[in-house]
Image (cartoon, rainbow, N blue to C red; front, side, top):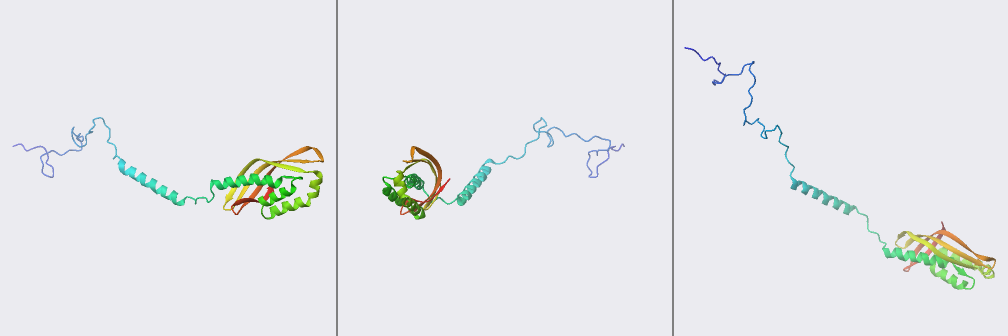
Length: 203
């Protein structure tokens, strides 16, 4: 009686055990290790869900908006109309302050007292009074025109303006009038609802 030449596996199965000289078995088609696409391509990684991602971005956007809103600067107390009023006052009052005529000197002084406040008004009137006789004798006339102006600072009750003015000066000592240009900075103070000149400096 001839015995089976195949050695049995330790588990007692009838399948032959692979020896060291044998090549490993090639998986058959249709097994789990086979390429399902048939072209050697690997399947891509898991896709990111679109709806949760959009929800996260929306939440971040809302959070950023809240932070910006909570840290925004306080609104200015100065309205556009305040800038306009201060600028108009600066242009008009500088003309009244720096213009005079020997014929209307008293009226010019009264205008200065209306448009200037504090030491500026007092000193300007004092200088004109001190030179009154000289102004009358020389028949002096000084006419000022504002050729450029702008507000550089303003808050509740105070403002600063830069102006470029042209001053035409006439007297009986010179046959030809002199035209001079100045760049000045003026300070304005609101008094009883009116912008008045409170300081003037040469630029």
